[in-house]
Image 1 (cartoon, rainbow, N blue to C red):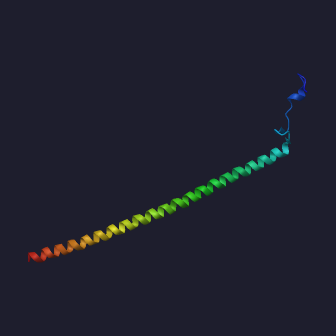
Image 2: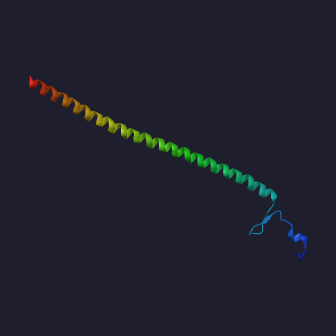
Image 3: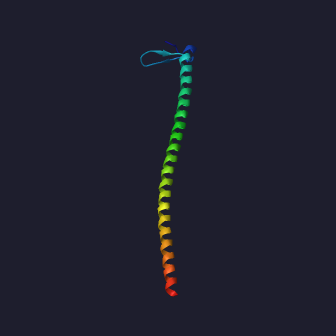
Length: 99
């Protein structure tokens, strides 16, 4: 046990003790650091894939939305064409009746 004033008690310990009594030295710390870097990279890759999947999903939703809008506009256009034909027939009938 270290005595008061003993400098050895103040030296940094190059390893950690685990609850089960095991020890990890500086080599393991380097491995954790490397693994941590890989985890950060994996997280970045996962985020990018999520962004890409969301963008793809958004494009698909946008395409479906655009398709529905196009169908609605085509139906409205058909109704307006029918109205134009009816108005032309009425105009012709009125014109012919006025003669």
